[in-house]
Image 1: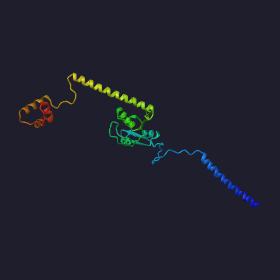
Image 2: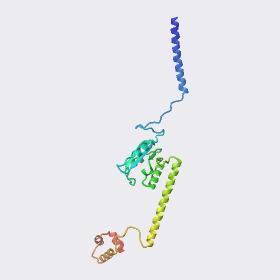
Image 3: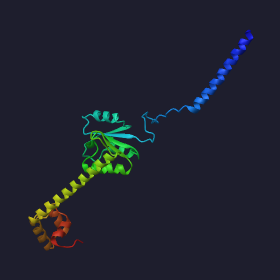
Length: 237
């Protein structure tokens, strides 16, 4: 009797193992696979599946100011990395801006806290965003809720571009009108001449005396040789 029980137990265990293998194989074929997570960069930041990134740019005018507000907002927006300049917005030389523009790749997006952190002027802002668009790079401004990766954001920047062009044309018209009014009053534009009436008379007398060279006359009057030739009506040789 005991031997029969042992055989029954052994057969039951074997059957259980076979059934477990069958069930595991069936689950492998029928159960859905696990969802893969986005790849992670070496620094540990999550990226999208196509390896595009959000790169942030912040700027403060002086070292006494703090960029914490901008950095917090850019981090909350999901920026992969943020570049910070300590420089006036009117300066052309902004090394961190040059770095972030160099590192942006097609599919990436440049993110700023506010528009004036990026552009020196409206024209400069339009040109910078236009250059990014030509490279396949998007642009976001958090405070103004502008995103050129969307149709609405592109429309906003087209309007900005039209306004900048209108402003430039208006400035040109005003400049031309001012010059025309000045000419009508007998004034000429440009830098005032260094050759006054007294200098022209003196140069003429010295030149006609045949005692001085043009170079000596120019040095004595503190003008260039070209000025002497131009006002005396002679050809420079």
